[in-house]
Image 1 (tube, rainbow, N blue to C red):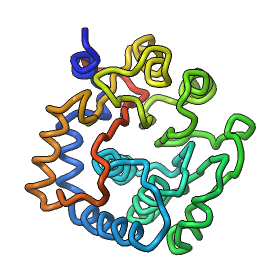
Image 2: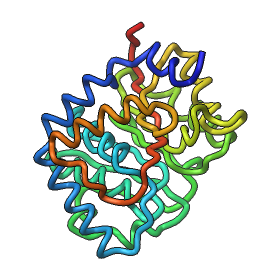
Image 3: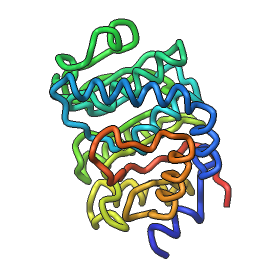
Image 4: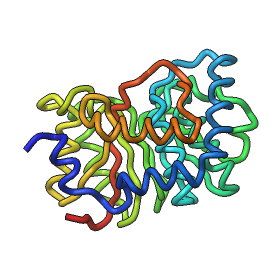
Length: 243
């Protein structure tokens, strides 16, 4: 069975095509504003975006829809994903983002109006720190190695309660992850627990990607915020699955 087919054979209830479309429609006005703010931020600050538009928007929409009080981000680089998450918490009017990174670029590039009340940044190796209890959304975009994936699947993902949303970046740069890669470790972990995933990666699931792009065009939010277009993130929930 190919990676693409497997993605649709088992889908966590939290992430389905219909759910994403509903989220896009419900939050379109706020998302439109957030996109314009991100476009302005990119023009003003020395940032190198790591998240492409669809995966960044799905992160924003996840936080808006699930309204988690605690969000954990492992890896921020210049803070592009951080700023998306902070805008979602701001628009919810509640919640705190805990970010962990060995680099402190984001602390120097993000504007104070986003970080002053809802951001807790830890500069250092996340493996040497204590993570907050009961996050509602976890974003992983850090050291892209099989060894690091084995650490976070055991030390973090295995300890999450049911109903937590998770996004892991750089899983699908092709139809399937490379053998012995971070993505391969993650997919094995998901299969072992009967969990599915959803991705809008250009090469792994072009049909879903085209569907979402069509929704974005109808909602008039399709103009690119930045030039990236691979969207290699995998999304899943620590919940029962629909087969």
